[in-house]
Length: 336
Image (cartoon, rainbow, N blue to C red; front, side, top):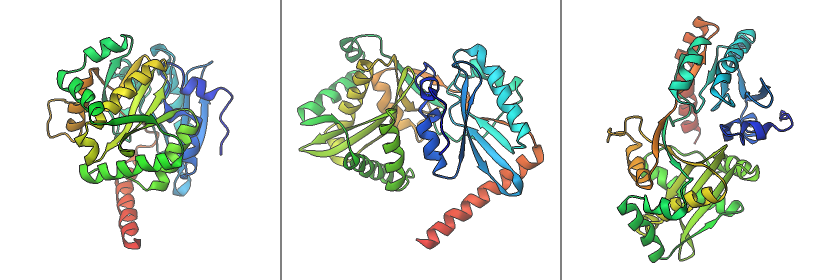
């Protein structure tokens, strides 16, 4: 595993604009899956960028800077992405992709100036809700929508208790809830081994927390949050039918919010919502309807952008990669 420079996570994850996907732990997770991690420091202590490289045939490669680069202020972005574009050209990469969690009003100009173009997204979250955690707990609770306050209280009345998870058995409980939720909601989940390694590495690294809501001693809802700089991010959540009946998800999310505030977070990020919140046919509309009851202000990110040193290779890859991925999925189904 590639060794991160000393103090890397302090800059890449714990600085105000930091992100878990720029952490040394995430680099290790991705290297175990065939990527090569490169830790780039453009300033002291910022900007920084964890670049993940994937080798392809004929000496080619692609690169991805997940949720980066990480900057200290907006004035640093143009130089950082220009340097990344230069590296992509020097390495003869097919493309180098960035997708910082920065608004288009700040990031679009610097990305365009460095030659980046809007490109397919890897991360599914382009828009979110963010809640200011500076008010006290009573004020935050009073600001909940009426139905949400009622639901949080109902969970307690129906015997729901919440605890911070620890150990592999609790991770497995979250996974079982997550897989059940995925089957019910129609989204794809990966294997237990994948989540065991990923969640376990991030929890051990101090970047994530898992909480379980229980009824009669049995887990009925679970949530995993990430600490990204000043934000606590509601990353993954799940509930079963017993949890839905007991309003467990409401009490669990409320606990995540107040624990984030106690832990020093300045903002709570609710995770993905529709870019257009009026679109009820959007798959994220149901989760958005649940999340908005807790408050928060919509925020939209600039989205993924590619630096493209070689236009022909980029076009060939755009055609070949989906066909290759489809073939692998078909082969996997045949083998199973």
